[in-house]
Image (cartoon, rainbow, N blue to C red; front, side, top):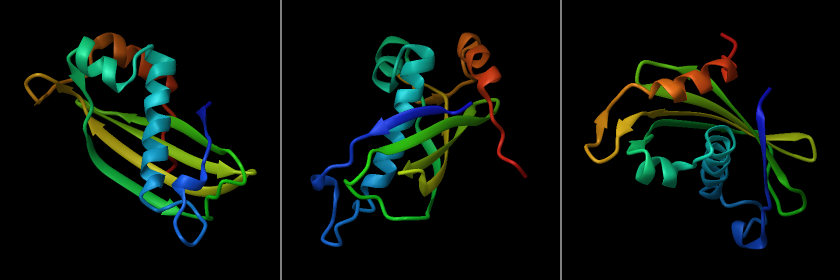
Length: 139
């Protein structure tokens, strides 16, 4: 079951068209992924980088927009890992307002030794935490 993260969209997130500025939508999705890490691992990206020497820079982001996002309702982001590779992890993030799908996103990042910026397999404890949470995308 996907993890749910609620975002309060504000007036400051909007453009002159009175909808969320396009550049904010990846930020909303990344905030939801960071919240997923905090919920399941106990650490977000900041702590992973500084305390675990583990980074997860993104190598791919894809967003499909389905409906405008406005400040009228909370943005509910559903986050699920979809694939755990030898050195990478992929996430699905779907954003909803008032039960209406606003965006669908796919995000892939690679695990790195942060101080060396060198690709690495996920630590065994993290891989073990992720594995049962995988929700592969349908083909």
